[in-house]
Length: 364
Image (tube, rainbow, N blue to C red; front, side):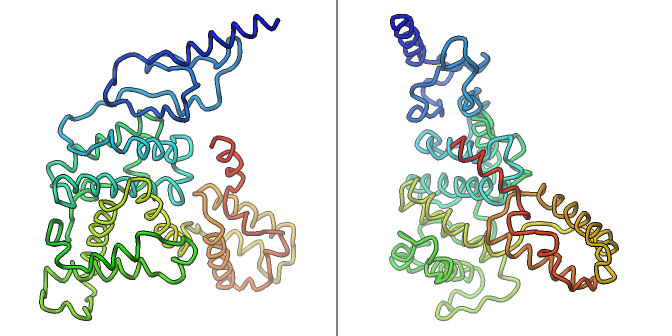
């Protein structure tokens, strides 16, 4: 029996060490570090069990890669950022992408775009792609991520456009950047951040906003660099320049370090607002009106309403707090003043599919 088990192990180990077909010798983005002992999977073959006669590994969706159909026009260095691309494809895995869009997938995808262009600028000296290259590069990024298991409609899910790879309306995208902003202060403020303290103190975020404002004013009044005041019509330009600032930061940091900083900054913004859309509440108002004469009917209506909210997207605990407050204000507008949360035993976790976290932790 021991001999049979040993032979099975050796056979499996040999299979694990065998390489996939040579379809992407110099460009394959499949992670070998974490999957070093998983069977090699060809693009057209069905995943094979880790051990003979056993079911496929639950991680096969992450390892079943396909050949990306690239344009051949994009100059981004995907190979240098392969770990980042793999991480993004997992964060935007097809089955979870719509649910995780607001909290995980889209922040990771946007960070990836920033880092890819930031790293490229070390060679080109330019912190943006031109409009001719932006479209094929975005298409290539989609193809690579889809080949690694990400969703097929990430552009729609995350509202990404080719303009997200250009300078958009920001007037500075090249060597003029460091002559316009206080680059040493910018790097010192953002090179290392505390994810919790930064959301309160906003040291890095404040420095980024100041740098973006100075860049934006290059298009209007280059003499007003001291204590700049931003007019309402300049807000779009300032936001576009913030992206340029983030790309510059990414060019000064390694891909992983830059990702940690960008995700930390994004989390501060993500937690500021409730991402849920509240549908019509007439049914709840009718069921919970008149001083909640029928608690059972009221709670059934509330449960149905909240379950609809759950299906929209995963939210963080801080977002759930804001969502609960927003819903409470809407209930008050319908003259429902009693504490239906307490009556119907609703808590923050009811505003999101928090049970998905158990699945995600298992898959990770």
